[in-house]
Length: 226
Image 1 (cartoon, rainbow, N blue to C red):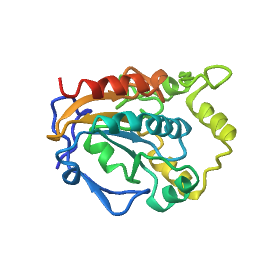
Image 2 (image 1 turned 90 degrees about the vertical axis):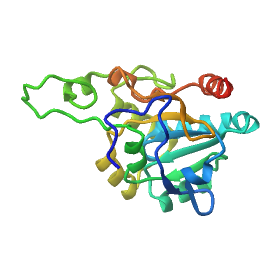
Image 3 (image 1 turned 180 degrees about the vertical axis):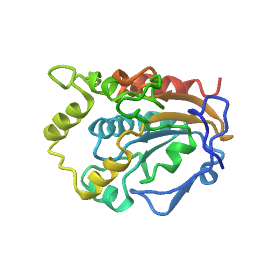
């Protein structure tokens, strides 16, 4: 099936997927979830400290969603063995699905930032034709933990140091291959139709690593039956 040209929207059918779980047995697929609504958060690998924080936020939201019948899943592009090792020490009630090649990210239309070559005369169009200078000029502090807004790569380094997280060879390989992957959240109804979506950095790189709040996620779930 061809990849969509842009992120899927409310009203679109969720694409099929089948992914191994890092904290459960077996494979989780769209077919196995049919008949139950679910929230699916897509993230970069464990090398991304902001993604790790959002998984923790989903863990706090999960009991509220579970009470309304909504399953909570997170897709990370970390191999399942590495993810199992990490989450053995950082357990979560969120069902963690592993897609190291980002096939499911792409199926939902989540793109990766593509940079124009140096000296290109093409007009920049985020994120498919971004200028390196545009990315370098971005400043972020979405969680308020940094002393000031920092360039995204610098922000990652500061928070990884704060967390005591040292990327291993697997993390570095995933970052090298998929470091510019954009992410997002999709709420899918019991019939497999996307009800709500929120996407990272739609307007540009200053929105990188800004994810929906717990209140926004809960409000979307509350509106699911309306």
